[in-house]
Length: 274
Image 1 (cartoon, rainbow, N blue to C red):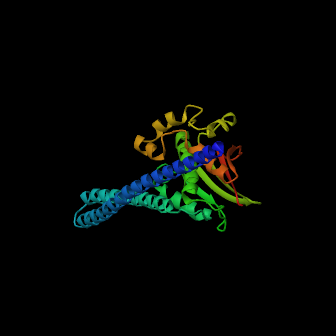
Image 2: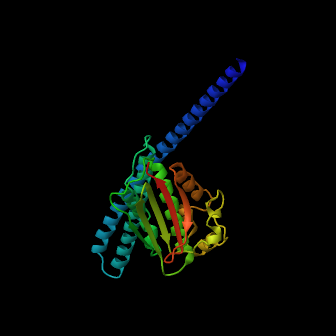
Image 3: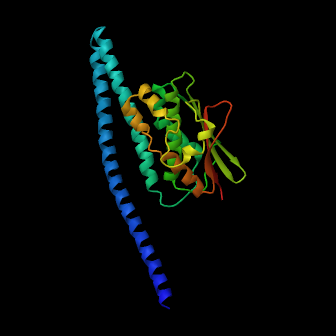
């Protein structure tokens, strides 16, 4: 009898501890969201101010003669470009904070979510002349899952591809995001023409804390892009792909890298549509 009581007590204690951890998590998440919302409010004010300043400069330039007017116009155009970048980042913040509120799992229309993310990194792809294309059927849905999980998969794979393409330093700067349905499986493939991953590292790179098994990706990035932009894409904690793998495993699938004749790297994520 005492053994049964002890076992029951242990189960209750574990349940209480689990609930406490969940409460701590949501409390922290709420605090972070409050900060993000405050930040987004300030960012909107900055965007409005930039738009006002650009309009004022355009007006001043119209009353000036060249070449001074041309210089003022260039400054106004720079402010407009900065405003557009802020808008793209605010859109991404909005996507992520909206998805944090999705407590229930639900099917996600893959094409729509991918397009949102691609648009949010447009300022990077334009700066480095990277073509990011998508080939996803409009009616392709994920299995029921949290939007945050889908974005974790998409963000990690896309930013990895962007870094790989920039590090390559070549002229063939392409990324393709594909989505297909095969039986009960939803398959997402992200191809890129970047630096590539040798086949002998395909399994190793998915392991936690393995970010650059060849030891040259981030050295090349330092030469090709400013440090502040590199930090936005992730500095290489070695956790991104392992998180993608864990999410895919949760839905009965997995993450693997496959060989492709037309691409340097192809990452394939499989999710079972139960």
